[in-house]
Amino acid sequence: MNSLFEIFDCATTALRSHTGGVRCLRHGDLSFTLRSDEQTGVVLNLSSTHRVIGQVNDASNVEKPSVGTVTIMPPHHTFSFQVVGECRIVALQLSAEDFRGDQWVFDGTMRLRPRVNVDDPILARLIFTTAAAATAAAQRVGLDAITERLIAVDCFAQAGEPSRVVRGGLPPARLRRVVRKLEVNPGGPISLAAMANEAGLSVFHFARAFAASTGWAPHRFVLRQRIHRAVELLGDESLSVGDVAESLGFVHHSHLARTMRRFIGLTPDILRNRVLA
Image 1 (cartoon, helix red, strand yellow):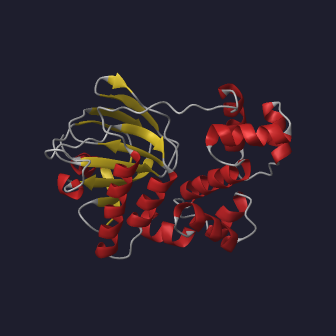
Image 2 (cartoon, helix red, strand yellow):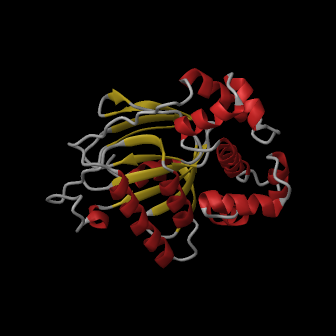
């Protein structure tokens, strides 16, 4: 297929859409191949229990999906994915006209590189707020901001991008061990000392190494993990916002609301009513 929305029209429940370019969706098992000559597809994950198997341009290139990660599917690339399990997403479909006039576009040819399940908190926040916009006009403004972000963070395809060199960070195995501990019980009490002990380091050295590896201070990383889990739990209509807040270690509803707004730009009520409903 050559349209992202054509794929989802065949296999999903559309939860909400304002303009032709934004849809909030829920779908189950899905297999597809996508190649477009003009459109750029962008998908924000709102869940993490599904699995994705696939490849981009005949090369396996799929990271584990998690809440807040974004997949960017520019034109002139082939994407073949198999999604196993139910998931929620926000899907965007951007035309060549959305990028026209930028120096990043030469002779009408898009230069974005394909990226799968990447962690870009700024882009994710823009997508969250655009999906929840109250009017079509506000959503159009959000789409313009998203295209600007895509341009700002991406190098020209032919130039490539140097690998990020992490100095003084945690060894990958230790980092995975700490993150797994947080994922098992995201709402449980976890101290900096306990995280440092899991990594086998002093508190001082752990805090510096963790920030070097993740780009986040440990406390903010923990809060972000809890907010991402809250996004998933808020999709369960049997849970009140208070239930979600309590299960994730927030003192009360307003504590969760303030923290969620800082990270994704939305309160739990807006997220539930305008994106997940």
